[in-house]
Image (cartoon, rainbow, N blue to C red; front, side, top):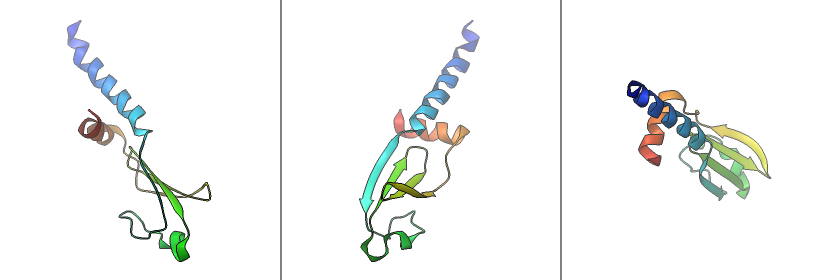
Length: 90
């Protein structure tokens, strides 16, 4: 029976990583066009404010006036997500 212990533990880590990925890492409310991921300087032109929500899965969601206007990045999945979870959360 113990031959499956490692498989069960690995599965639990993957499931935990998926749940962790939905969490918020940081929230930035700003009028800057110099964020490392920002490819849309027009969103903050003329002092307009945005809120950028960085998720644990590597994606940054940009909101303006409480409306989602853009998503930056590519969502981590599979082994990449599990590795990031192990590196940052455990």
